[in-house]
Length: 356
Image 1 (cartoon, rainbow, N blue to C red):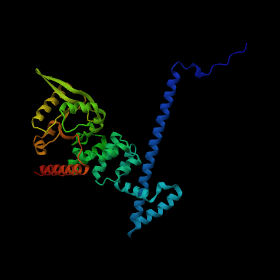
Image 2 (tube, rainbow, N blue to C red):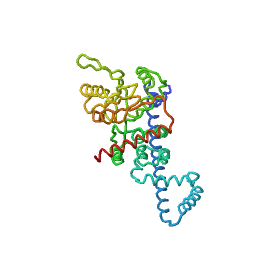
Image 3 (tube, one colour):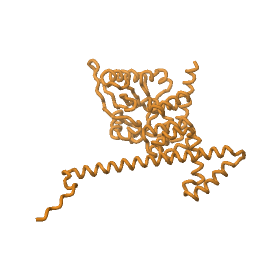
Image 4 (cartoon, rainbow, N blue to C red):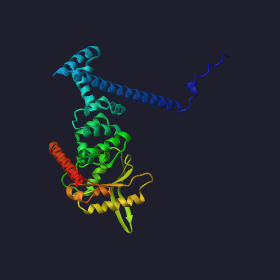
């Protein structure tokens, strides 16, 4: 009797093993594709920087008006003929601007590990250096997509951070710390105001309506809060002596390594809110803070606030941030003017305080 042929090794894979093998191999393929794409992207970004830098050096040799345009135009024609439309006059001009605005090659190399050339193209139109660096570093740390970066810029995220209200020297120190050691600070995370127009609330609603709407739209609310926030509890009950208190919303921020308590208020900020939040933060610090965590922080979200009253209370010393929220956004130009005025006023007050 003729012997049977030995079964292929694959026949002996246990039930479910074939599926597991497929998943493993697919993961290997996807991981390699991702790694190769990242390597190619970083290489292209550095190539564009080097081209821009080299053109810069050539332009500096010229001593007459229009020399730079002639150089770029001539080079563009030759490169397009050899390599295609990716090296058009406008593309080369953009590369030169890239090398001018991001002059440190080491910083560009670090950023290019996370940011694509498309990211940098979104950053190039930003004229203010600190603002541009803020978006670049936050994009790197929080791994924003190009679409997310565009949305953050459009929503004036930088103008809404406490960082934008600081004197340039202090703001730069925080950005340097973020760049060198990924050190995230509350001034980089917290905003003022917060845009809650996605809640769909009209002019008349109760605090409970506001809280319910946030819970329904928690995913979008987390996006508005920013990266790193994790939702922990609603109406967190705390007991002190024989009294019960309730924290509206409780979060944890992974990079700050802190519990974040949020209180929702319908009207303008009132001084007594400070004592209430201080009580909550001290209770959280004593009973909920885990080893390795930093002290808890609080955000009081109000429909309005009076800036001098907030400053006189020195809420920052207690780890409390007061911010307005908008359920209906004003026209963009009105909002921009308001934010720029607030930035100028805050910087002036800080400078006056330091000079006193």
